[in-house]
Image 1: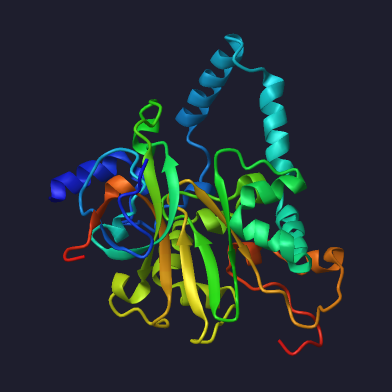
Image 2: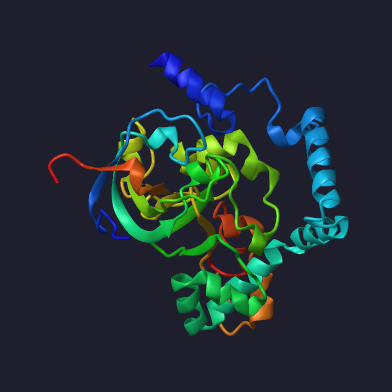
Length: 225
Length: 97
């Protein structure tokens, strides 16, 4: 049993959930492995040489990736808060709903989960760092850290409290572990005191962290909650 | 492709070790959850990772697990749960259902 386990974790070290060594820096904190850098370069140069793609294709893909940001998610949320038909479409078929914002999710299925007075959703990927990049861009480094990935599933309320989010016991916490083909975004609750606000004004209340579900949307000064 | 499990049905996650690109977290193996949603058929990631086409496709389910059943001494609310997305070949019928 133990030898089987050792064997399987050695085969996919990125998916190991046991024996975290906290003396080693997290993957995102380390300098890239020179061997991996060399292998990437060899593969890239070979593919360019064979005419599979050009250097400019790569540059453009990186530019597109880095142009995406949580601001797009905030626009989607503000629209859902102000347009009930859009909200229904977003919760039912998010991939097609976000095409209105020029977002193409590709093969990933975007799934929007709605926070309510009874339910708070938070997102994690314990196996790696799955994230709706086509919509929200590159995830924050803590999202990729082993500490968040391992603790979000077993002590979600403890992790939420560290983000300053303390929820009463009457609000259930639902953790979504992004293990497969679905990618998740939280639809936060619309803050109190924002009746009649425009979508543009509401967007500014929607933070990246509220789209991951580790916080709520920004409260309005002077509102009770 | 017809799903083997219905929404609302209790299922057990297969308790097995398997090398390769497995998308079933270890902390869920052997645990019982309830099918929350049937997502449809997707390419098998274990075969995709081998450079194959992912055939046969695998039915994907969202399965909900009560937190108190996953973690001994879980301190949160009784209604707290966790939902993970699991492929059909990692699920088994729960005994007696």
